Length: 324
Ligand code: PAF
Image (tube, rainbow, N blue to C red; front, side, top):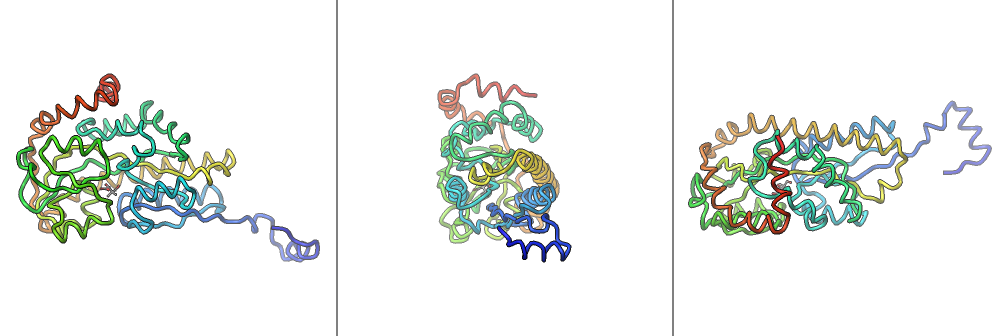
């Protein structure tokens, strides 16, 4: 922006400092679920911190509820630079950054403490360094949550109950290889198509964390919820290198700190939904199966683990499992 001498003296005479003219860059951030959901809470906390830390030079325009497309499409757009940020599960991420696939292995993590410790520790932080080579910059691990099965046919306690069910899955081969050992018929589908598919009965069920089941109102189209917790679903805040490479070091620090705060807020919302959401879903008419035979699911998975060990290395899997 340039001003003539006269214009500048008029503006200065009007008492406006240079700071008043600092341009604001509005960043487009997209995610799959509603503004009130865990992704919305995390993204809002991130955006507020960015705006505060850059004195308003950067702010966000949020696109919740898959307004910019499915997660795979949004990641592609961030890679191309037509979208600035995405808060996404790892579901499709392994197709861009293959090293990430290891954290999608079913029954890899014991609980939230274990998962968060791994993602925030050296293993998770090292995975973040793999993104720039693929045209993406990962700011922090956020969180989607442990996934549970819902369907319209029956309660699921053990794999035999899941066998034969046509279940929508994410477009994620690691998940699908595992779910096949449960006898499920995995049907990969982008999330924006899922509610309609459940409504029309194109699929019998789906699997997602409590915060997604709640915020997407799946109780309106699904009867049975089984707390299978069969896989942890990590998520990430990813920024386009087109934006990242323009930031000075101080602003980069602001974005990284903001991502940490966004992640903390998102995880807090996941905790709240885990604590209160199941009772809410019951109130909304779902039958909840709390006692699931996890050992039978783990046992069924053994052949898939042979494949995972080949692909990712048994030692690398063990390193994650051993973290306490
Ligand atoms: O099921 C999925 O595709 C994901 O869990 C979702 C809902 C898009 C959130 O990341």
